[in-house]
Amino acid sequence: MKNNLTITLMLLLFVVGCATTPTRVQSGKITAQTFSFVQPGPSANLRGVEQRKPIHAAIQSAIRENLEAKGLTYQPRGGDITVAYLMIVGNNVSTKSVADYFGYGREYADLQDKAHQKIAVDGRNPNYFEVGTLLIDLIDSGDQSLQYRNYAYRELFKDLPEETRKENLQSAVEEILAKLRLAK
Image (cartoon, rainbow, N blue to C red; front, side):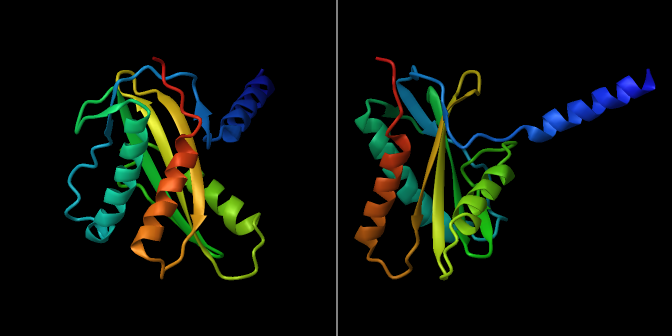
């Protein structure tokens, strides 16, 4: 009897340990007319928030342009869909996440690990490089279920003109949201 309990517990731990965070989710056509971004809350004490404001503004502008072109209307708060996004920046050695607009209580360490594995480990690039990954989630604001998740990554170059950076970001957002289907 004790052996059966031990085996059951071991199997349960194995199954739970095998659970993984999906990098792509598509639940079918999304029924929505409006969207808003995750509200990050007070950030006065967070290091680096001020320096990231222009980056967040550019990301939100690109997402907003894409979703509005698909027929959704932006609302500052309370949209049918909540847009969350995660930035993951890495190089050959290390990876870090910027989760200012990913939401509270949402686990992203597994996503960061997967990005590092794909880009730094599996990529096998012997040269120094920096890569940025943008992951976008669309969450049903009613039941908080994840309706859509996708990501894209681009090599980061420090000396690019602002217009080229904007074009790179827009192309990444277009790639991420290309498979999004909305119910009419």
